[in-house]
Image 1 (cartoon, rainbow, N blue to C red):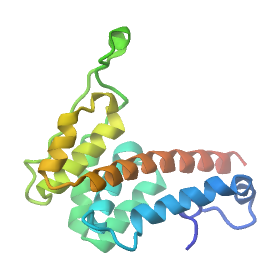
Image 2: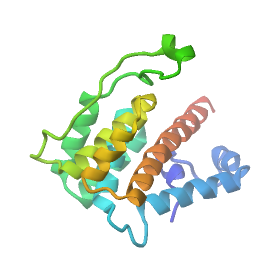
Image 3: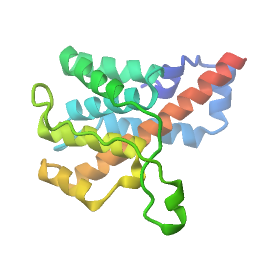
Image 4: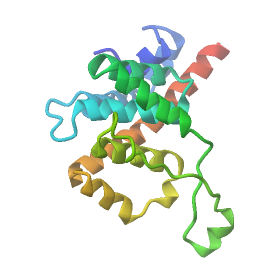
Length: 195
């Protein structure tokens, strides 16, 4: 398979950016393997591909709506699951997008640096989102914009909605991978534009 970051940035084989990426071949390979493990597993188990694509589309639109990654994951969700779900997930992400990170520091020495911000609740959206997917999107919002607010109750909410421990770990890894991928894509696009 062609490298996903190359696809998102339009990097051509033999180009200057391709050469730059090849100086860190192990990092390039690991990023691609992470994509494959998270989005193309042989056995997705109880964390379905549809849920993975929905969380990805939401997360990328939430974090970087202008990124080519946003279009890629939204189209993936649209093609593989449904245009209606893709539109609804993108609508939620756009509506709840805000500047981050924010949240409350628990440590006394950092309390002055706390910045308030919104939390989200999608449980009231049964028209298109199951409780299970709603909690996953809420988790994506938490980890993307206000990770310092994370508490054990958030994990229990995921468990109550049917997420097992392995799926919670994979969900969190998927969200973290997307944050990494967005930044790599943005950096490479900036280099491409400057060239």
